Image (cartoon, rainbow, N blue to C red; front, side, top):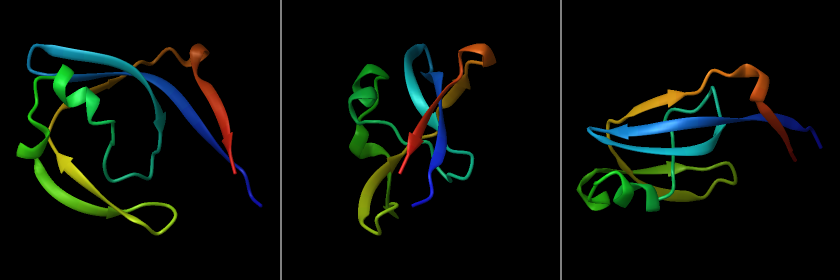
Length: 87
């Protein structure tokens, strides 16, 4: 089985005057940045008011997403970039 290295980076998710900091896996091939619904409340968002989409995930299953346009800052301290093996 092939192994893939995933970058784990610190990010800031910003909605107007609210900011959440968290660690996130960096997927340069992803169409969307996906975060747990708990962040919506911290950012002052009503999750079900977002545009609903169904996406296919890696195992072929489908999950619902609610889309919002938010600002995302990836911290650029490359010396603290972590890698995790998947697979």
